[in-house]
Image 1 (cartoon, helix red, strand yellow):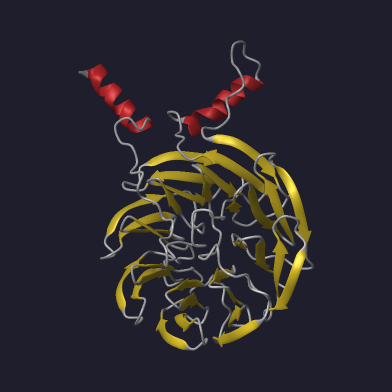
Image 2 (cartoon, rainbow, N blue to C red; image 1 turned 45 degrees about the vertical axis):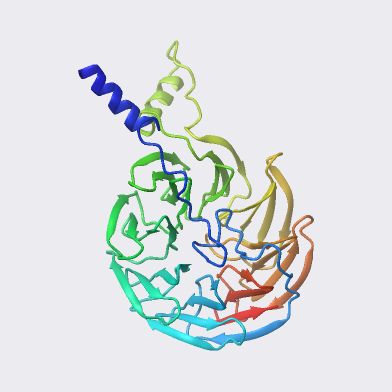
Length: 403
């Protein structure tokens, strides 16, 4: 019985033989919905891949009393966005008029997820809110110990988000009842993504993979520098960046071998000492390849077809996935976006904002600038594209709609 128990425990803990993640649980958005930060698993920031391309003409402006860091979300003719004025807004996409607002007790920098008529978002008051998307009526809220700037993802009737109290939470989407939580090493700013039953998120200098139904850890990947960017997923490969400017590609199904993170440093010391028969440690579990893009903080990656787009300070990069090298880079006079904020991609055009107050449209193939338009005092919000219109928040407190 003892050997059988050990074998069962090993199979259950370190393999998928006994408990395979549910392949049908994904936080990718259904048609007409915006179920997660930047809309989909690749973080494209667009819900109309075949729609008309915006041409850089101002459509309308909606004003709030404080800067907008939150990235807008669009669903059913309404754009949803939070502001540092402690409010969350619903605005008509056609006219820019306010439909409703909801007062919280802290800044709202978390971007929302809108699923099945419910808007989910976090606030710096430490609460995750669920509101009726049509009326703004509160359905429920969930209290954590510290601020929530991580944007929620929704999959399989579960809401997932991180908080500054070091925890990842999974809540029942209908009731707000906690299903499980997982404690990381540091506050969680990164926005989670769920693909094939596995949740991916960054915290401190680690990237995590957890069973989405149970919260059971599968992979703890050491990135060596802070991870605040949100992961992107394509074909079961996970992409994320760290604050040193390193881009990682991981096998999304990989798992750590027993006590890997604890034992590897000792293994490395023995190899340095030149002890006979001790080989150099193998690559970390899950590691496929890595690339230094730029020696600075870079944003969450966007993955489209065979290219990754990400930014570092005042530069935007296109990375060839097959060659694992830079395809082009575009330099501006000011910082692009903010920590963790990716560009938006629609067809052959990429949209990104800079802190000197410009929204830029670039050709995805060459990086050439197609047009630009001023958006107030600068932006740390990521642009969102829906129905041929770009929506973006600004540090001047305005939400801009550009067609």
